[in-house]
Image (tube, rainbow, N blue to C red):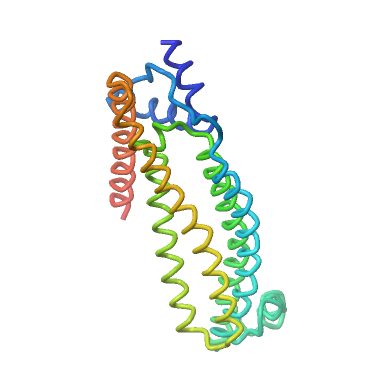
Length: 258
């Protein structure tokens, strides 16, 4: 059994190895056996430089997009509220007079204070969420530069990232269209267009490169030894079953709590 662990340690990157072991433990508790790898997965002859270049370029571009989103948020506050940007929002929230008004009989001042707090909470969540997404994005792209050919051909981790990118592009498109509808200021529309264009360049470019590499590795995978092929596919299918079971249980308990 130690040999199997050695194969997985040398085949997977650090975070992917931990993921596999975590899924194996959870699968065991649910009666799903995840077969160990019986051979070391095939690494690329050299790191996929296109992904390393994309990692650096994407990190810089996404950092610029995050800053742009901050400016866009300022325009959004001006467009849909009575506040004149983020600065005015802070004044309203921390102004004692606003709290005095909110305690009065009129519901309008109280509602404005509630809206101000919601916007302020969103303002703090925005950079935090963006930084977390940027970290995970860079980590995943860098992992793709060195991961095995088997993972790229048939691995769930690559397939899920492709699905996630497609969903992210669709979501960005919907948000962009909504911003064009609700924002009338030309500068805000221009900024939204630049941000959307940057997102398309980063995510769309990565998606295209991933699809090309997946196709190339898929052809390679069809020609490898049948023993290796069946061992990896059984290993990967079991991991997918565990993930599927965990999702089903999560949805079940969420519905149970409603």
